[in-house]
Length: 228
Image 1 (cartoon, rainbow, N blue to C red):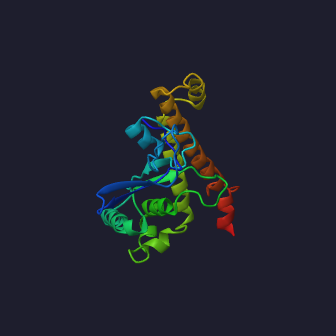
Image 2 (tube, helix red, strand yellow):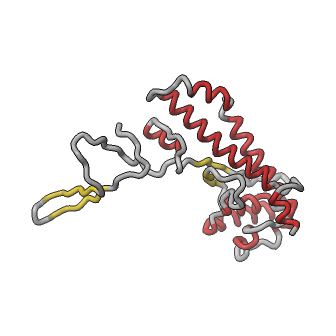
Image 3 (cartoon, rainbow, N blue to C red):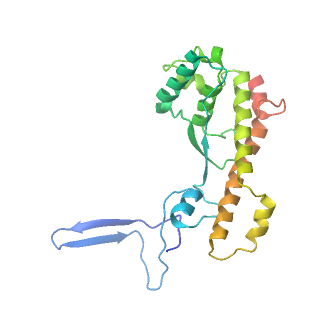
């Protein structure tokens, strides 16, 4: 299997009907003996590991997949039906139960994708908060804080999801780093470790962002913004 090159060198396939030639034109020249690399695509590590058997350090396309739960025990039948309908019709605005999140800068105001936050606000809205939301104003209503209560629940849920995902890895950071020292070759164990370590980086960056911007904390940058 050829090594992965994230920059890639694209080929163009052309057909010359007059000469009957199939031409493959490279974007760069090659010399005899040069290594031929392949660009396997803009894939997260779990897909690289699943389909090709390797994972990458500092993969710029690595992401954490988050699956949300829209069920609410406090919903009456009308609210539950309305929430489900808005979730379905809101797909055009990126509102969904499934999201992929890249590694982020915890200090950046641009943290989680706005589509994820909008989806979680819709899911977290109680009956009275949900009442004024319609398909016509859905995108506008969920693009910012619906209420302090709702936003606190969004952050609480995010924290629980991330903590549970981190725990599901089944190993500690220290043990993974120690094991990494003993797996330097091209072996499956090494790539499994890379996958876990890189996923930890993403989860930790998201947890750090939640901690810094958490509206439940009076010292958070996010709470200071709400109070302005």
